[in-house]
Length: 262
Image 1: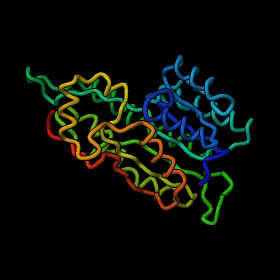
Image 2 (image 1 turned 90 degrees about the vertical axis):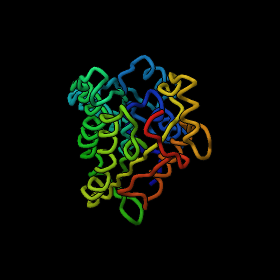
Image 3 (image 1 turned 180 degrees about the horizontal axis):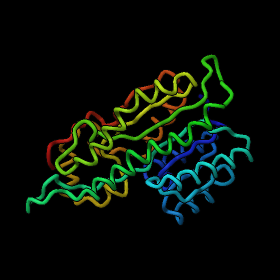
């Protein structure tokens, strides 16, 4: 599917991997609708990118907030005439916590809800609200494609560490729903792809101590470094452009397998 002159709705689009993706798609001629809670950063980025970018302050754990953002994006599409070609569900959080701590206290259910509501529920809610505006697109190309959904899981979906029960559950669920989502959308010519990155440079990794970073490097095969956001963005663009990528989870980890503990 061509990236140029299509609108992509990107949650978490004001930071991290989702922002790198937005910049990459925009550089290829896409229109990007950025959904994020950080209004200062979001408005700044939209202003920087220019007329092919729009920001919507959005809490992906809130259905009405997503609805307003999607409706705003669709209204913008009507102005530009550039159909919604894809959704990049990039909003996500991590909140470590052992299922039972050293005091024999269970992890608060509020912590579990926080992670699941953003990483899993927020992903599905955004997709279900955006898809009806994609199913009516004019089919393009010999296969009659209408669009693509790209989700973000994590290597924690497969080899999560201690303290990552809620996070691994949320990302494992995203990985698991990829194939049935692709099957649900196949009749409309809409694909579903999930990318599962390992350690990438982000605000989260910048907060890690040198000891933790060194421990992570020991678990890396090659390259022995964190991934660059631009490397992630390249795989998103490939997922958009390659019609045979569908219903699959792509690990982007340099052969890294996380140890049980750091």
